[in-house]
Length: 79
Image (tube, rainbow, N blue to C red; front, side):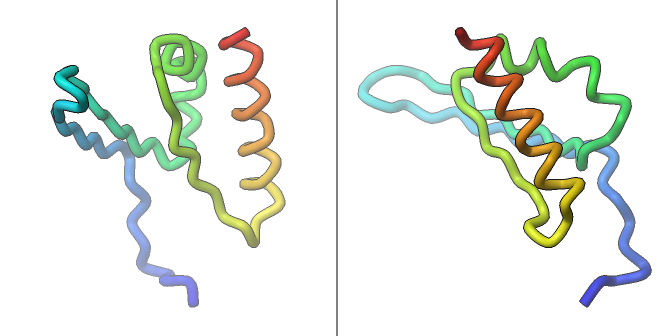
């Protein structure tokens, strides 16, 4: 059930450095909670990223539609 006292995340960042096959890798996850203030930065994040973890609410049509929008952006920017 939904928690009425939920405090929406403004932004959380998680970073981890690992070595894979002798290559140093930085993994950074930025949780924007779909905040409007980050939409202008999406193209830049997509362009400079090597991978994506997309999270959405399967019971929200708005969330699923936004997921489709982001997937289309990723495909367009990485052509």
